[in-house]
Image (cartoon, rainbow, N blue to C red; front, side, top):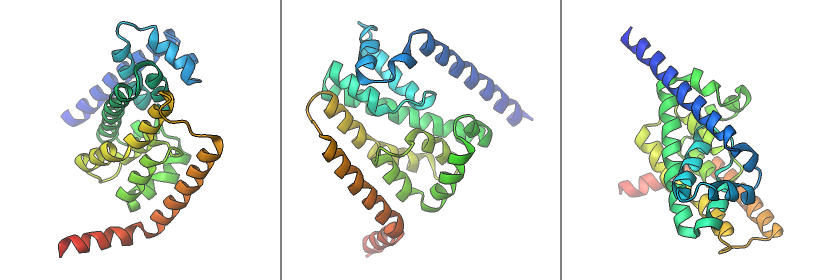
Length: 226
């Protein structure tokens, strides 16, 4: 009975906080600004002298409740603050947000996940996460064409431990964010043909890893045991 009451209380608290955040984002024009790095940069700049804190909050919220790719806000932050400040803020916020949605999914179960992840996406990815787990999550976090934030929610429904999940997030999620920050700060400029080559190469690597990832993992484990 106490467990059920605690779950209801957590549901109510979560709904109240998320609802308040959604209203605040709508009222301040966040969703209108989310269409491009330029408008997002203007949105964050309006929060001076608390721009860094606002940027961290935006990155955190984008993981938890807003279906906004973190790469867009990362590029905007890099334009405003420079490469390393924006990257470190983004890395911290995305890691915290990923851990938060994972913990909520683990505590509240399928009912919580269903509020954010469609049945189609759940059917597509949940079994894959359960079967391939570390290999799939690491590769999905590395490449930009996967719904990272939604995968964090689905991971909370599996038997992967929180520590293992957080380690994957901290090690695998930063690299795409770093590239976005480099582009936003003009440290790196990638032409369309370069993006296409990276996408094709990344997809080929992903497919090979999904097919042979278990063998590679077993081989590494066996070698380490020697």
